[in-house]
Image (tube, rainbow, N blue to C red; front, side):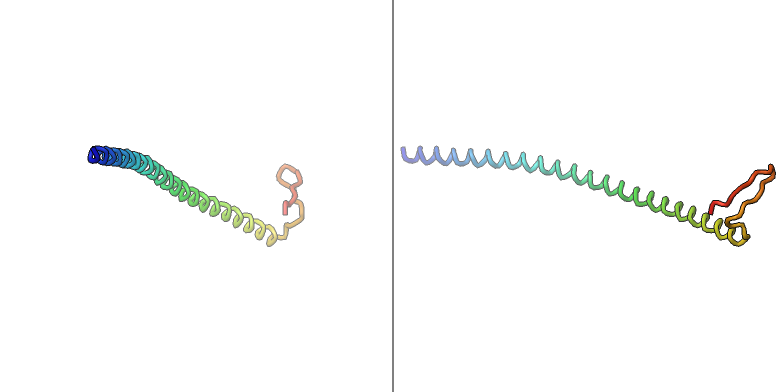
Length: 99
């Protein structure tokens, strides 16, 4: 009789142990899937960041080019002595200097 109760306790213990093991396996599977999703998100965000950095570099270069052209235009305008003066165009209108 004593062996039956001990055997019953052992069966109960093993049953609970297997239930916990199965629950932990299911949780591990869920966490692995979540980790995979996060890694995919990280990769996508890194790609987007690289793309945005490239775009920012291109925009910076274009703005720099525009500023250089404006500076060249201003330098050419001041060298010719037309800064602040007005001139008549071919139709008789008056055009003022912007800078």
